[in-house]
Image (cartoon, rainbow, N blue to C red; front, side, top):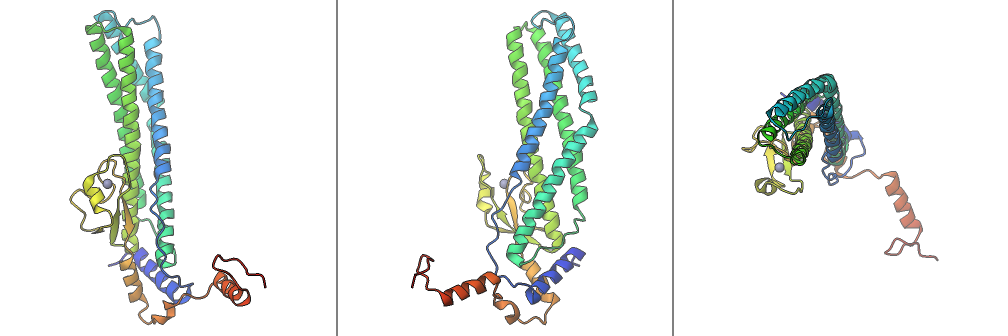
Length: 318
Ligand SMILES: [Zn+2]
């Protein structure tokens, strides 16, 4: 049983063929992954790591100086300070704020995907499609939940590793300079992790919203589109241009399922065309076989009849 959105879409496509400016099928626009939103989100998560760094530095430099290269007493003091940093992070980087950040980016991805779908539909069907977005709110809620948990875990893991680092530094009498370097390395790792979360999570959400909207409007298959990247999965490159059914995903899932998979789904509109055929069976093919002359087309014809034009499009002066 097709969804309400699928039936409305089919009806709209059929009406467009019947009465609308019957457009010949143009090649679809090139795929547009949400790259800018991804990098914005990465930037935002790196700032959260930066806040964490500031809290830790503040705690380590507060009060009577901890000489980190001293003895086990100093190690215990450093650990106490990391614990205080943990409390400070819990208080300062409030969960609500993280939720707000994640929801903001999820919404931007949903809006971006809707625009891409509109461009693709207009090129392939001559009209935009109807989306009710029945599934989208729960996909966004899932993204927010997962992202807040991932950022929390990133903060917790970083502090946990720093604590271990301090203890080991005290036990092995690591020099203060070496310890500072190790702390800087740990934060650099946290930043890389934050970027990976932003990229991976954005691509996953984009792929999930794409699938939900496709299926809602009656697109039941897609063409796999591999996006160039530094370390591509060879079997994803091999799938580029192949057609997959939504109800029969490849063994490792649809595009965007695997970690940091930037592959995309290009809609196969044949099922929508089929549904439109079923909606208005009385529409004769000749009704939409010839594109109706557009204003520009008529103007061009007029110019052609009136003026002599050379092969470069220049008017030949009489
Ligand atoms: Zn991929």
